[in-house]
Length: 354
Length: 258
Ligand SMILES: Nc1ncnc2c1ncn2[C@@H]1O[C@H](COP(=O)(O)OP(=O)(O)OP(=O)(O)O)[C@@H](O)[C@H]1O
Ligand SMILES: [Mg+2]
Image (cartoon, rainbow over all chains, first blue to last red; front, side, top):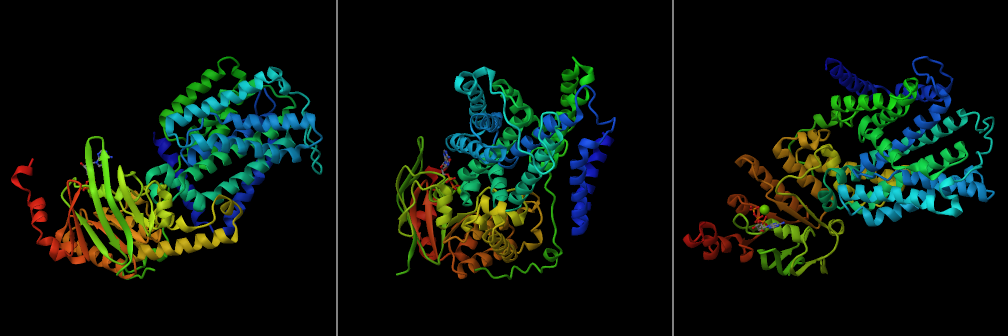
């Protein structure tokens, strides 16, 4: 227990250190972290290596992919408080867009990417607009159904390969020196990492501005949010659609790497696992979510040498962790913030209003 | 004479068998403080809920600035210019005081998700303007030093003041205050009365629910009295004070006592 307390303090200390740091130090820290992430495929550390599977592949899938998707799902679940159990559907839509257009047209990866993202967003709007008026459990059930419907639709539609799926998906064209081939997962990892960083940056911008406040309000008290003039429906659909867009990116990249997809890859388990990453890491806190996704994606690979019992061991570890830290490893924690200017005001209540 | 901001016409609100409001007529004029009083359960909060679109009246009309607002979505009613506070404080407890108020100020912003992502000039301008307005309002309510504290961590009285600041941030043409002085000590009540008058003098129109008679007599321009969902009096403070029906409602005819 003392250990856990210490880790909590560590978190606070870290946040404080960050807040007190001058801009140059923040930039330097962020830059080194990013550089570290890009260098990861070259790290040959026995602690983090994955005996039984190729470390560089593991970095791309599942680790990188889970992190990306967890960040996307966190917009939906963590920011606006909507429970989406069919998140895999948007991943599938991105992947199938890449597969279909990649095999049947001359479009390349970069041309298909916006189409895949656009279609994922469109399906987000179509699913979200009628259903987001539902609350809690009902929304969870409807989204769960949607996830399954997309998969079953793919299984039963022969023109997109039915249950055999689609093979021969083209890889992205060379990008300067980076060659995208099935043999080398590194460029894919870097591509995914770049998208992930871009998305984190966008999410942070939104969180600090009006949409972030609107989502905070909706999550805390939907009725009052409406009475404060927030178009709650619109902001919920936005959260849903942005989450869908992120999964769409993931799907397109994924399909271009593994070259052939089958519908059963897009099963309910993925939705549940991504949700588990979000909850396990700490709903609403992007760093917690990332950590959660890394651990949940990486651990089963790291302990692959245990072969059969590994999922059991993993499950037990999860249950134990969730009991020790029910709010996740790095829960969202709103820190109070003080500006010296606010403290010096004479509270005479004198101010003027317009 | 003076311009009508809000008019309730024969508003009836039934909850199953309970008639919370029975053909209530009410007129709020621009720039006044109208107090809405009545014993517990008289239907005062229900009037607010009907005005702000929380409930759709069973029958009757609610006309705001010449436009019927029955059936209009809640957020649109707020955009049109009606803001409220809550009898049981309902702040965004996990957001800071400042964020609570900025959330109110966001109502009239044009930029949304796309503006935020791309950091458009309009988004940045609106963010800055809303932040400044929020700080101004916190200062006006005397709680600027609380700006960075979470709503739930504010002392009780400051939470009530914060609710007023948040409502004012939406720049309402009509401000609805539901028992803003509940739980206040006499000194705090006096200070709040001054604040409410200052809000009116700044050009706002206020509909105020309150139980404290001296506060009501001190601030209101007019008083309307509800009893069991029916409006039983409406007039100046002196008129209402001397109205036998009001006295009866408050002192309670023996037959009504339960
Ligand atoms: N949602 C509801 N469902 C059922 N009955 C309700 C509802 N809202 C209000 N009522 C009833 O309507 C009546 C008026 O309630 P209201 O809250 O408007 O009274 P009030 O005048 O604000 O009282 P108080 O001074 O105690 O705040 C009460 O009998 C109450 O039980
Ligand atoms: Mg009430």
